[in-house]
Length: 164
Image 1 (cartoon, rainbow, N blue to C red):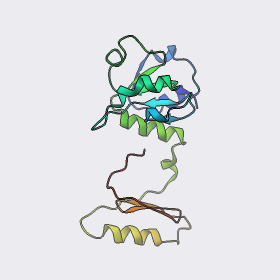
Image 2: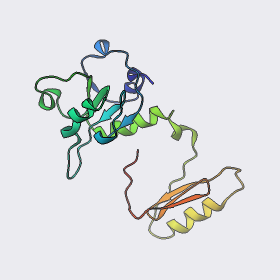
Image 3: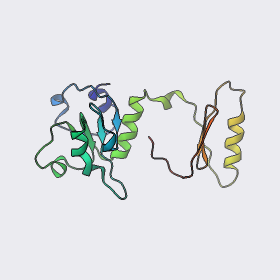
Image 4: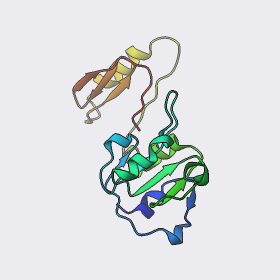
């Protein structure tokens, strides 16, 4: 996928250099962990609680990142400049979600999503919905106890998801 195609998925962006000056780069993947960067990938620098991903941008570039997404001003991150395009966004984590959706062809647009909220009975309701096979679809669920996706189960013991 081309960098320009991915950037068009971002609702709010400031591109440095300007979009017209960006090379027509082929992006081979999107990552937010600099240790996983491979040649041609887009690196998204996300500030965390303990560590700021912006601290690892140069490492990501050394490993082959073709472009970088971040939320810090480019001169603050790279006082001497950067050899790859830097796209500044207001929220890197949100940008990561939009970019990932574009990368995978916006799969949520093809899903029927049911949200269950309330005080009591959420788990029971979700499991009852998941057992309904009358629709002819394979239901999936994700909650704090785990995931069930197309009849495969994976336990998770956390209440928040980082994956876009």
